Structure formats: C-alpha cells, structure tokens
Length: 629
Image 1 (cartoon, rainbow, N blue to C red):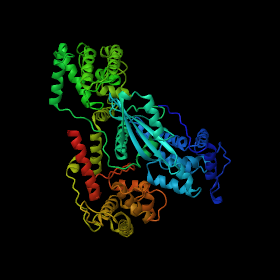
Image 2: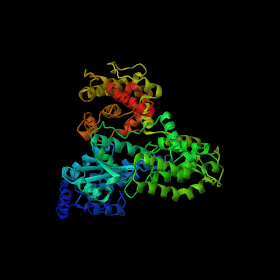
Image 3: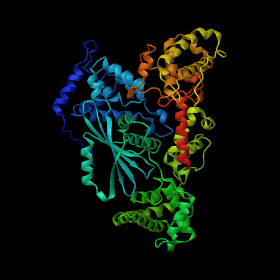
Image 4: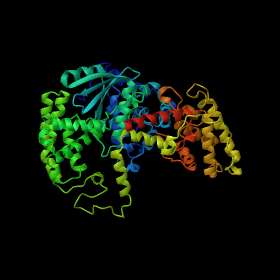
C-alpha cells in the first residue's frame, strides 16, 4: 500500500486561508513576536520552523500531526536502549521550550501536540495557553481524530494482520491508519502509517491489489481494535533493538491518541494453546506420515521437539503455521542462538523443516504456490544456517547481551562477567526476563507493582475502604495546623468530586473511599517527611497533589472522554498548572516510587478503592487464566 496521500474534500487554498485566519485571530494583548531573531531564540532549532511551516501549508492536518508525533517519538524512552532510558530527552521540557517561544510556528506545533501527549496536565496547560491566544478552531483542527470503523486483513499463512482504522476529526477530515501487527516476532506492531483519506477508499484499493485467495477481510469492533493495537504496541515497546521503519515508531503517539478514543473492554489477541498430549500426537502423526516416516530417529525427533517449541512458544503460538519469514527466523537466528547442541546434531534441521512444512501445509490446505515459496526460503537460508552452527558464537542470554553491547563479540574480550561491570548480571536477568515473559506476565507484573507484590495480588479483595478518622499518631505536633489545612481541603475535594459518584459492585454508594485513601496518603507523607509541612508553601497545592495522586492511581481522570479531567480536579483547589513536581516530593516522603506519572502504581491496596481493586482482580484472573491455558 502506497503511503502517498491525496485529499479531494476541501480545496487546499481554502484550508490554507482558514489556517491563516486561525493564527491571526489572537487577542492583541498577547501579540507574538513574528520577527524572529534566530541567533537569540532560546526555543526549538531554526530548521524545525521550516518543517512546521511546510506541514502547515498542507490542505489536511495530517502532516503537522505526523511531525508532532515524530518529534515526541524521539523523546519516548520506550524506543531507547533499556539501560539508557534515563538519558532520553524529556517531553515536558520540549513542550516547555515551545510554550516559552511565542511564535506562530510553535503555536501550530503545540496545537498538534496537545492530544498526542499522555500527560493530561501538560495537555491542559497547552490548551489554556492556546485559548489565551487563539480561537478554539485551531485546537479542533489539529486534535487527534476519533476512530469510527476498524477492519482486519489477515493472510492465510498468519505472518501478521493489517488493521485499518478509519477516523475523522471535528472538521470532517478523513484519516486511515494502517497498522501491521507481526505475529512472527511476537504479535507486535512492526509498522504503521497514516493516509489522509477515507478508509473505504483505502480498502477498495487494497482489495484490487491483493490476491483474494490468500487474504480475508473482516469488520472489527472498535473495542477489539483498541485492545489488539494497544497490546501490540505494548509488546513492540519492550522489544530491543526496537523495530523501526520510515513511519514507525514515528507515528506511535498519533496512533495511540486515536485508539485511546475507542471504547475500552475489547478482547485482544488470543494465542492458541497446545497440550503436551496434542504435541505428542502431532509428533507421531508426522513421523508416521509420508512426509516424515523416513526421518524417524533420535536426532530428528530432538530437532522436531525444538521446532515445536518455537511454534508454540514464539510467534503466534501455532506449530502448524509456516511461511517464508518464519522459516527464515528459525534458520538465521532462533535455532543457532537458542538450541545448544553439537553442529552435527543441528545440521539435519533444513531437511526436517522441508518435510514438516509440507506436512503442515497439506493439513491446512495451503495452496501449492505458497508452499513452494516457503520451501524456497528454506533453501535460501540453509547456507547461512550452516555457517552459523559451525561458527564460534554466543548462545542464550549471552547473545542478547552482545546485541546491546553488554558483552563484547566472541574473540574480542573476556566472555565472562567482569566484576568491574557490576550491572552485567542484572542486565542479563532483565533481558532474559524480557525475552521470556509474555504479555500476560507483563500485565501481571504491573498489577503486582500496583499492590505491593505477588502475595498482595493474590490476597486482593474488593471490600470498600472504611470511613475512618485521620491518623495523627506519628505526626509531629508542630505540623498539625498545616496538615489540618491540607486535610480539610482534601476532604472537601473528595466529597465534591472524587466520591460524588462511587459505589460497589451491587450499586451501594460509598461516599468516603477516596477520602479514606487521601487521608491515609497524607498521613504517610506527614509522618515520612514532616519538613514538608514546616516549609512555607500553599496548602492548596499540597492538597491538590495528594488528591491528584489518589485520583490517578484509581483511574478517576478521564478528561479526554468527557469525565473528570486533571484540570477540573486542580481547579477545585484554585491551582493552575501542574502539581507533578509537588507530587514527586509527596511520593518520596510516603516511601513510594516518585517517577511514574503515566501509570500511578502506589504499591499498596490500602490506597485503592474497591472499584479499582475489583478491576485489578478481574485483570489478574484473566491474565493468570491466559498464562495457564
């Protein structure tokens, strides 16, 4: 599918005129300095202004949204080496530089970035900044579009799926997002790009260019599309080295902003599960078939066992699914790296693989042309495979460590862990876990960190937090007056906003759970670092930080979907701007990790409402069941 874009809706001249009007409609009291002195400008580099202007001249909002997404991707730690993510530039600092550079170009980029950033407070600040200077139409035009249709295209060999998402913005501009989810590499996003036209046109073009007998097209409800795309993005984000194309992960922030607007609660990808009995029956059926009866010996059985291991534990989890890319992975990487055995025992693999592919394709009624392509791929990569198994190479976790530079190539240094590199063992453990953990384990680990560990996760219940008095026992007397001021503000916010519509599974109201959680957190903070309340500082900011932490940890902030926004929460305290820095201080005082503002994990169920714990229990049971099969 070509990534060239064509728009036939509104004339380019009309849309450019509208953009000019939007940028000229700002109040005179906030007039920008349109005469930029690039030698003195502290903001973004000059070449960025040229890119912004070029993108804004388009007759469609897509180019500027793509530019913003690409810039945010360079500041996304998910794309970095796992051991160097603390060195990635900060998105908030970049946005600050734009806010400090009051020009038409930076205003355009801020408008395109507002719905792409994941920090709601930062987004709200951009919104306020723009509203002080421009009409709402500028933000509306460059808001991330909302999805309205999803279609999944699957190939008969199962290498991957294309998910087509049709979306439009409030102005009626059409977008089509094409997401390729690769199953060979673990059901992750391998590529994604965006077209500025309706999804119906893209699908019509696709149908005319793809062989109908090899592909199926199926409508996908938006909740399922959201679940599949988000799961595939998450797995792609923990893959290192990262998968990169011309447009991925450059368009990740834009894609995520779109799928966040789809309904939640859909079912993602489900891996097929094979029991030991089924694999044993498959093995015997192959070796008694016309394809495998002449290969029935201990070496070939050992090799087939490993082939089935790859088929069930890697890729989409189907040992009967074989294609040119999957056999390439087995021969050029997986087998030489994972299977520790003498070269003479590994040498018969290509012959066994040829026979097993024919057996599997016969069982699945795959057309002959695709079988021929797969067999040709085996022949093409056999010389490389033979060279690898006869070479001096690292295997297992050591090969991953070499890939990220934690160990030198074989022959260029000591292959053991040097005591001078104390983090090597830790890196090996992390990378090994990264490779071995499936999406279920990753999700379960997030739940464990939310509640404080595996034992706490297993013992979770959804009983409502009790109404309780504030615990003054460990709080120094000289801070009581200041703590009381903060406590009163927190109580009022919980009564007016956070607890206003909370109930248990039966619908019974619980108008105190957030208040209890906020009181408990405030008590931990005041006892952990009383100096916070001895220093001069606004009580409303401290109370805003406490309630923001509790609201975020309990998933109460849904500004993008019309619910309570972080802006509305902080406005209750008369606070303008972000409280994230104050929240860091509070979290440290309470003994909680202070660097976690996308997902707030407090490490204890004592600060989570019954609704939050009930949701965690449902997710725990779901992912444990998927993991156990």
